[in-house]
Amino acid sequence: MGDCAHMKDDGGCEVKPDRQSNQQFDPKRPEGDIVITKSVGQGGVNIYDDVYNIQYGLDQVAPIDGGPSPQLVIDGLCGPKTIKAIRDFQVKHFGWAGCDSRIDPGQQTLAKLNEKRNRNVYPTIPLSLNTDGWLLTGMLQHVPHTRSCVHAAMTNISLAMAVADSQDSGFLGSNRQQRMKLLNRHFKIDNFKVRLPILQQMHDTYGFMLNVLNRPEAFITLDTDNSGENISSVSIARLGGFHDKKDVSGRIRLRRGVFLATGIQDFAAHIFIHELRHFVAKDGTQGHFAKGWVTDPGMQALRETETVNNCDTFAGFALEAKNGEMERPPWIKSDVFR
Image (cartoon, rainbow, N blue to C red; front, side):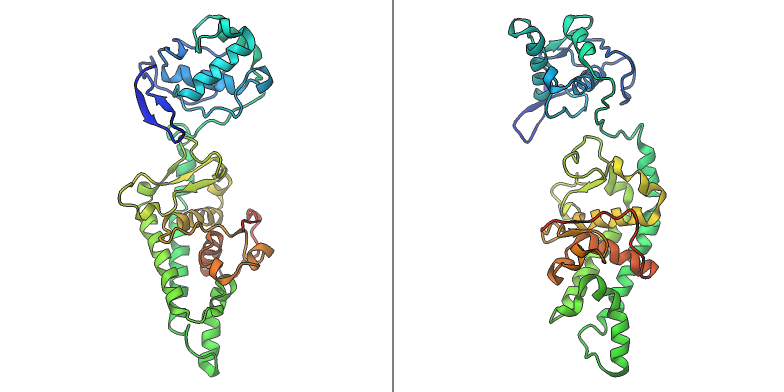
């Protein structure tokens, strides 16, 4: 089967692909019948684009016809799940006597695969920096706006820190009320007995976000291996990845769901700041208590101790610190996680 590229979480071994293809691998949907140049599967040559095409074809086969369930991750790597999917397909149609867990060019398994494929099914293909780089570019163009929203949030917090623990009376009380208005709207800061340490922690969190936004090319990329397939259709980030000095591979990874945000700067900023809250977390708090706009019932029901850790709260506050109080944006989705 070849050399093991790396050990997976489930203990399986993903085979290192043979990249001796005649042309550079281009992750696009195969047109017409599935065609391969060399054998794919157990003991096969396993050229990257051949494996990719077989995975794509198998994912178009219904489970009742021997297709994989769940579908394969189409990554061009012939690992144990791909080999099992080939074996299961062969057993379904040819029995154990006709099963060798390998698909060869021009042989019966490939012919049966093309017969059983549902051409109207379009499997999920991981993003590629070669062909989907425009998504990354479209989002990165909004980094300056996102940075300005984070700056506005930090300024709002800095102004509030001077009055947060003072008495709410007289002229100073009026000034305090104005400075605390947006923070109370989003974070319910006045519900804390001691507020200054909370505000300092929030200020620091936004400051870490700026460090990332000042070097977006180092920390933001596409989800090219579908690692976020079961997490989000929009974007993912490794919790606390920014502070992990032992493993610097963590990134904010954008998925196909960012498409609409490439044309709406506030939408893009909201996505970035949400993921940045995950990425720069130092306390291990997941940051998912509720999702939505500040006026949504689920967001309103948050306790103050939850608001100061909630990703969408950080994103909404930064947008309103930049723009002033906003109507609920149409692109916001709501959910309650607790």
